Image (cartoon, rainbow over all chains, first blue to last red; front, side):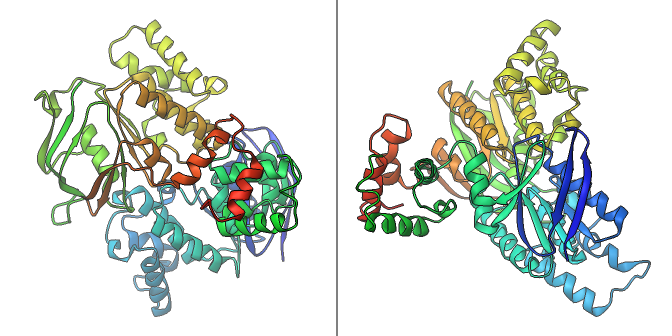
Length: 254
Length: 256
């Protein structure tokens, strides 16, 4: 089941989402320049989900500290389950402990969230959301502040979550987003759905790596390459060799 | 300006917990660019806090090589772009916020506004000048914080994850500014995770559990052969051609 949302206003930027279908599973990218309104789209989606009661949308905000309200890491992830009780059921206790362990936070369970580093605070916000298991995860720049180890954890978690929930991610790292998601929306005065590789080719700014630049040039001259192949050197090489074998490159005057 | 010397510096937030930083010894050379990296919780931001004096040192001290102790440094010696830029924006508007540092450092109102306007232009913030900082997107808030320390013109500049939340235009602008800082021999630290800073920095410091585990001169870790091969093309002098690049890839002589 997916959710069809219509006429959702993005207040600061003065535009409106005319129509958007939020899927019930998979990984999706929400991309656009700074100031386009991506975070506002997320907060409007949360607001829609609360008012419509149609689904539980869980937002991990750009600034995780804004949603860390409790006095210890443990309280932060367990407060929704306590509901006036002091003791958690064994199931919840074990599940929450495992999630904290996965994010490398179990050793910090008694620590105050504000004392954690920026990356650990983001992990805590993500872990707290994982404990709630929403129908749709809205992750606003989840990659920021994370070291390589935690990026790997995030990636494997996202792949796990997408089995039973939709995961919508904003990020400016095209390379990472193209690795993990195949489709999404371009956000700039409207929401334009599309294949992420196509959106990258149409809208991404100056290439960050020579391989990305090479791929853009190949697409510019309509070479038969997959738009997203540049994210993986082995895949890129495979496509180059395929074109070479078919004689396309040798005869070209690029 | 002189080098900055940290001697046996350690920071502990709570009695009984392990030190968040140190003890560490570090010399930041005049005009040097250091990239400080390490896992989450390794003490990068605590190092920035120690250098700016917002957390007291548990042990050790920080001084200039001229002998001036940290607590005698004049205001504005250290400029810090924090991980969360909202924490440092106090002006009613973006323009006002950017002009605050020069004003605080004793310039006249007109001069402060002039310096602020120059920073606004440099970081492409003109359209947002009269906005409340809280109404900017995360990326633009970051850009405004960068413009604020640019206007401050500090002796030591600390950029804590400066590339966070920036789109490709913002990143281009940041990298141009960082290169400009290097050209004018600004002493600065970049704290973060992305390899892109290894290309720019003079030294890479690796922290783990608050201690320095590696301190090495940058040796251009990204694929240098690939970079060199493409350099002519990359900077737009049309050599080598795309076909030549593809040929090299196909024949395995160019490792991508």
